[in-house]
Image 1 (tube, helix red, strand yellow):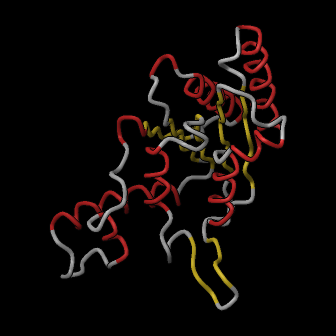
Image 2: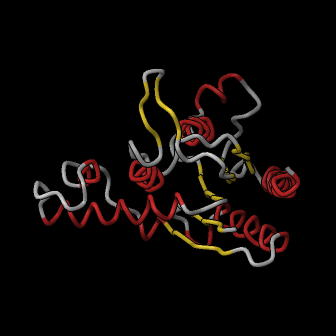
Length: 205
């Protein structure tokens, strides 16, 4: 079994999402001896955002129409999508930044969403090609969003990731959530305790 551990927080050692993804991976390793873990830190290793050159993955890698820059960008996209496709479990650290995910995480998603590789179009609509995987989203939030209609309307983090991975054919998306982290010490302690329970439940599922 292969697990891809992804962090996207820019806060380094002060990041709660990094703390929780590490805790999640350790528990998966304890439950699955021999688990192969790969690590991707998008705060330091993020691909560039999509532009005319990085869209080169839409053409064959050996195409004469690709410039040298496009060929380099194509290699980045190929490495990321191949890593994703050969992974059984993905643990994604996804803090809430301005109601959505970090732009570094979005850049990674844009590289792995490739027609013909991770999804395809059919006469009945799009079909995901990356099914059979488990995704654990480690969601961290300074405020409370899951407990009110307004909060749910403002949140485009967990809902977005569920939609994207579902579009790619992944139905097994599990959430580890710590919210209210910036609302005082008591709230933070409660959030971490709740997240620890979620981590245990991701293993039991």
